Image (cartoon, rainbow, N blue to C red):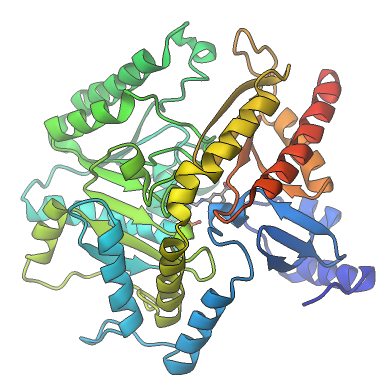
Length: 463
Ligand code: PXG
């Protein structure tokens, strides 16, 4: 669709307001304001129905690894649509694209992850992982192992179990969540440690301390009752929280010691985001089960996957009974074809090493050069093409603004108005551009973000 001018825009806005309920939105407020209608995308750019060009610093919702308008993905989808638009895997059947995709994933995933199940979203993958964890312990005869641990600031999706895992507390009250059997432990959020009362602790020591909190929680609940620990290698929607170097090693030791399955949520960190195919490789994590979505198809088709480590696979796949789980669209041929082509292109074009050795370090260096000394920037942190710029009231004391989110939203609005999409999580500005972003596009993002942060600094006193 091309830009149609403001009458067309108003027409769509009115229809949208009358008939469409948006995710994570205050409907009445949104309808008053009117939505922006995105009509086209190419590379790292989007266009709205007024013809305005926008640079997408977030790869959609952290997912469009190859950028918009990739012809190869479109053709792969079209071919599958023409050839086999739908068939399922329930009736002792399969299809070539899903088979090839599963086999391709097995070559890219961490050691031992040879088998995958498919679903259609990150949330479905999370719920599937938790069901499989329950099934695993039931098969092992450990019938009391039912509690699922996760972390403050965690985001694992919105279905009942996934939202119960969430450590973002506003996600709970509207739905009477969390369900019983879901418990939280602290996040390894070092930048916030001082304000949270941990004192002037260094990152390495803090990483060990927070891992220790996991151990304490397991002991408090009883190791015989704890089924799993779910975690993102880097916490995404909770604030782009990178674990201190000491954290993951200790967490794995604890999970192994108390026989707690480690579920790694790679929905954001998978497919090159951190400079490896998976965050598990960047942080040397050996999980029992991995969930992935988003970048699996560059967001071009809804598809997610759950991979089983050796122990889980051996137990579940040798149960000699029907595994009573699966979706109508598990391993959809069109979604599988697009995902398969997406992985082939990422590999062929060397995008993962590019993120690790070239464009990732470039983005990280330029962000630090531009923002580290800025008066309202407390910290610039990042790995690969994932970055966060924490806006704070007091840089020296690492003290946040009093009304979390107000300053971040203000800054984000400047970015949006200036044609840059970035996320504000509380007062942290977040970037996760497509893996194909060029150096000059990184510069364009930085110029716009700097203008927004400068302006926000001027406005701060009034917020
Ligand atoms: N796990 C992680 C780590 C995620 O980031 C999900 C699971 C759920 O995926 P689905 O496909 O069910 O949405 C996610 C999704 C945001 C934002 O505003 C982030 C997500 C989704 C929507 C908004 O940052 N992440």
